[in-house]
Length: 304
Image (cartoon, rainbow, N blue to C red; front, side, top):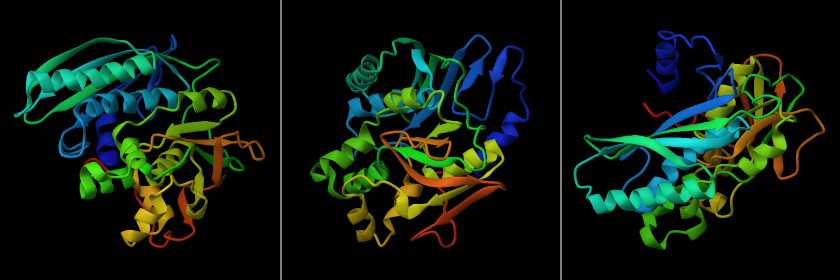
């Protein structure tokens, strides 16, 4: 069973309840009073390895990836809670350094840490819940894409996955920019602010465009067409992909952890700083065009 199938089965067993405007199935939940909430896990051996991640970077990433969910709704941060599971081999000094990274990210994006919990477990894990304010006049959901819209993405893609490969291969000599992209993602609140009121649908690129485009298609009930050759790539990604025998666009589409914003906008209105990478049609599912599209693509699955 894949991650999203499991989530669907679990969601079917619980009810959102009164006062919930947006429940399970978007980047974050939205309450009727405008409170926005999201939670994510960062688990040792799944999302990071001590051999390739500095301790403070682990803390930064744990909060940043959650804040990206708020950005994807057009929401602004209000506060966060951090649950910490301490695995074998982690000293108190190690954990303090991890939290220095959490604190640095909290300060950078004005999201105070307001609580949490600590427990012992089989490995280090951080479970972060972020709270925010919904965008006015309404949060941007995944479900608003319509045929005729243009599919756009912010920034550049593939950097985090390329950085992961280089860190595992080269260690301390890895390309600095690509390594930093993997270790310290940046939630795109700057871009989100320009899309509120303009984008018909939006989500963050956490598991790769290949997976996240499918989420958008399912939520909106449309077909998403993605041109792999149009994907904007971070410097160094194409060379690394080719060295691995991969097509650069396909490599970037399945890598994940770029935390850029994937959105749909009316035709002819591509916002500054974003790149058109496809369009929306009637139908269902995702169609990939360009080099590497043959056979279909899928992004990151936490249970695979």
